[in-house]
Length: 122
Image (cartoon, rainbow, N blue to C red; front, side, top):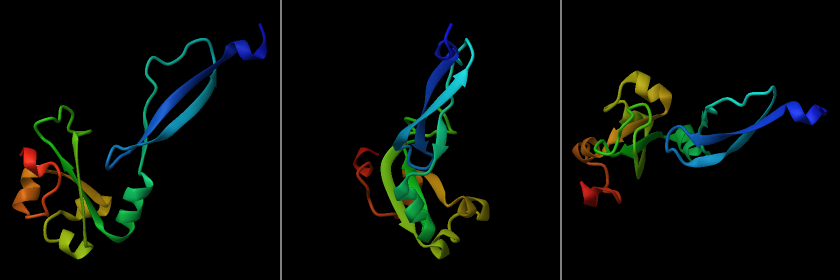
């Protein structure tokens, strides 16, 4: 047995926590005979969301009819950026501190956010 016979490689998919866009794969190298059954997904923010969140409050539209996991809602593709001052009129301090929110398209309509590409379907 060589040194390489006991090394496992696994890929972790890295996606943006806010918009769910694919960022990259991270490679893990470990020693041992057994590969983990599930490789956890590494989550961070993409460059676009990071840039918006430096200056604005980011709103990510979600389609509640297609969402099966509330911790990972179905993103509609709609995004809005509003000033932090405006965000204080609609969202809690905890939500604002996070820098972004997932917002149902129904609530986006109620807030009179500009119509996005998914509005036509709702």
